[in-house]
Each structure stands twice: as C-alpha cells, then as structure tokens.
Length: 148
Image (tube, rainbow, N blue to C red; front, side, top):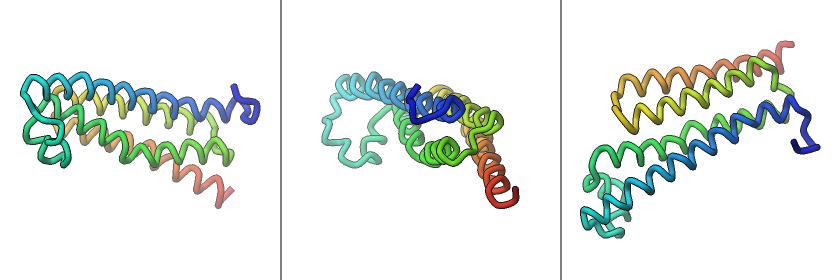
C-alpha cells in the first residue's frame, strides 16, 4: 500500500484497479476475436479506418465485444473521477466503497450481457443499475460536503 494513502483511501481505489483490469481483459477479448475474424474473412486492416465501415463487415458476436470495449471508455470515466474524488476528498466510507464495487460488478455483468446474448433490455437494466450506484455516491457526497 502506498504510504501517501491510508488504508481506507486505498480501499476506495481498489475498484478502480478492478475496472481497469476488466477493461484490459475486454481489450484482449477484442483482439482474440477481431484479428482472427479479419484474417479469416480477408478483411484488410485499412477497412477499420472508420469503425462504422468495419462494423458492417464483422460478425455480430465480434462487434458486440468491440462495442463493449468502447462502452468501457464512456461512463466509467465518471466512475474513475468519482473514486479518486472519494479517496482524496474524504468520502471513502464503507457505503461509498461498496457502491464503487457494486458499479464494477454491474459493469462486468453488462459486458457479459453485451458480448454474449446482447439483449438490449438486459443491458439497459445493468446500465441503469450501475448509474444508480454513481448517483447515490454523488448525492451522498453533496450532502456530506454541503449539508453536514
């Protein structure tokens, strides 16, 4: 554990490491599905210059993994900033840390849904559930900072 952080602060950052690790796992999943598919289908890499053109050439199961990788770079940016805000700003209580872990677990579930069955309503429920984790943390922090 870094000396600059206390144990509670460090615990608040572990979900960050977990989601970054998961994002890299999904990156590997993309590489292990996209490259062999492009080779097998004789799709020239230059066709990936614009992702919408490449998407039309790839099978759905390969696109789903790639789309999920992109999704892991959208809303999770708020998660990362919020986790660091909590760790550095004092909001790293057990409830917020549990919500951070909840976010990570639900995002991993979202990835599996999107990369396998890709039923949009299930993805939507997972997205909403993960978003609620962020909303609750933000509301708790606003109350902690401005009302207490």
